[in-house]
Length: 114
Length: 172
Image 1 (cartoon, each protein chain N blue to C red):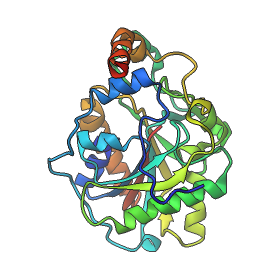
Image 2 (image 1 turned 90 degrees about the vertical axis):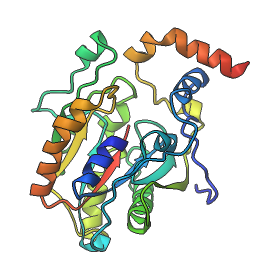
Image 3 (image 1 turned 180 degrees about the horizontal axis):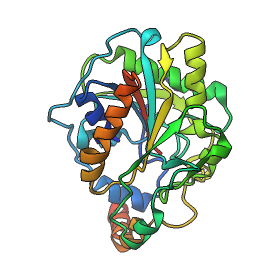
Image 4 (image 1 turned 60 degrees about the vertical axis):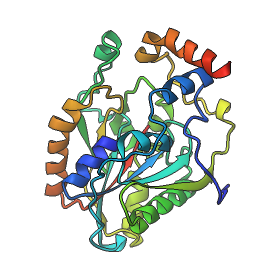
């Protein structure tokens, strides 16, 4: 997403990226970022919650309007209404890359716990 | 609910092992390179917007993003894009993505591609206009070369032809 934003900006289009993983900004350098702690697959808000979606999007537009220099990350104040474990964002099947790297992922988890 | 001092933890929804693995791939320090920058030229209320998501949405009469090839080749992700008219309804679209639950998007496209909300913003004067086409690609790109070098020039040309000045990007 960061590379796509960069490509648009290089071609004269202003962008704002809404993201749930602002840490990726350390890898790529994204022009304008609004970070939100909402689950994967529902970054704008809950299904059919027009009022909530609208609040989030107005905040994002404000980031676009007020950002003064490239690389700015604004953390939005919204909190999701469910506990992370209850969000059911996972795909029905384990993704191909996670399947491929499952041993390494388990190892990284074990190292982080130790 | 809001928390004015919120600092977003991008890993809070991920299982601990997957978080640890992804964290090991991201630099610990801030990005130091150049970042491209196109200042907003006009107030929001005079600016023409488009929306672009990595959610893997396609119109039913267009080909879906290729999930079968990714299942065979897990490091590959479909690098193409789809044009989504902002008038598309829930029954006009399909969603394919192997890394998230697509069920919510199939119920309400606005959870990742807020076409209805931005039409309301145009109607109430918050923005100047929403261009007629929104854009969708597939957000799993381990090698982004084709997406950036071949797909994006087409997207940029389409957007410019449609008078777009600013773009909201939303991941899955």
